Length: 135
Image (cartoon, rainbow, N blue to C red; front, top):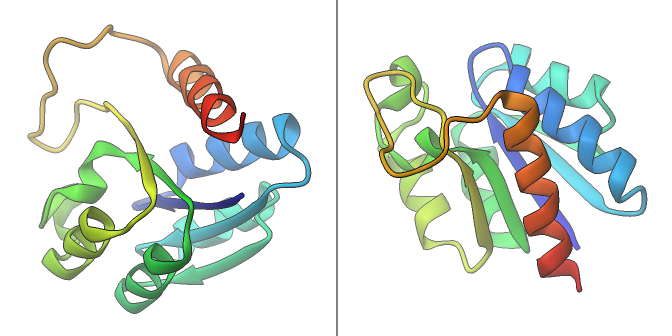
């Protein structure tokens, strides 16, 4: 399974995702794409198979992924303090990949109707969904 993890800012969520997925699914192909080099570097250090940075990397990688994982803001243009461009959000939204979006209520985007979980709890939910897809 080709897993694309996308993160922005410091890459903290992406780093935790990468580490947890690498541990739970050691043979998975994880591509980490950050909106900036700090996010990409954090995910590579956590065990991503490949890494790239920026808008074009997200557009290209979204076409090749089986699953895209990241905070819900990756599908909202101009979110994460402007780090997600309209082209990035469109590419992720139009990808044939399954998307596992983490409901993080930051950057003026609030998701209602979901349980208020810690980041650790959210990562555990991601792993459960990945296992369903991989089955």
